[in-house]
Image (tube, rainbow over all chains, first blue to last red; front, side, top):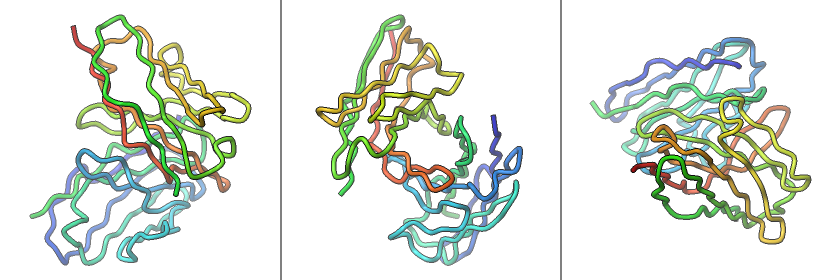
Amino acid sequence: DIQMTQSPTSLAASVGESVTITCLASEDIYGSLVWYQQKPGKSPQLLIYGATILEDGIPSRFSGSGSDTQYSLKINSLQPEDFASYYCQNGLSTPWTFGGGTKLELK
Amino acid sequence: QVQLQQSGAELTKPGSSVKISCKASGYTFTSYDISWIKQRPGQALEWIGAINPGSGGTGYNEKFKGKATLTVDKSSSTAFMQLSSLTPEDTAVYYCARVDYGGYSWFAYWGQGTLVTVSS
């Protein structure tokens, strides 16, 4: 199975700041990296797929980058609604695996 | 619009089984696989398995073989997951999600989740 390791596990930031979350795959996933946002009590919401492709309706302050085994999610100019948990996912092969999550909290 | 509507919360006893449902609408049910994903309280997401509604073919995470059984009813565009021999470790929110493919896979549409609580 492909292991997905996210860092940091938690992160405190202020509105207006920019943050970066990273995801490391245990092997090359050839850009097949997906990012989700999850708010408490809600289902995960797709943000980015194919490492860099922004899902329709997602604000452009969200961006993804990376290749091979190393990927990043950057959020520019944090808005109040961005404070949530974020998960990466291996989309290359089953079992599709998720990172342990990053909880983004308001400083 | 695409919607996945899951059945309501379940309270069950250890050793029992439970079957939860996921009714799809807004797209051709047989054109996309449905996956099931587990999330224990405060924990990360775990992929359980997927089913092709057209063929009924299934694929499971080895960890959940023998625990989860995936089926569909094409006539009602509904996917089902049965969990057997329940233990407290099965207490979790279970999501269904539509699988999108483009050389790789992602989950663009999710159900609202079904909370399964296993307690004596």
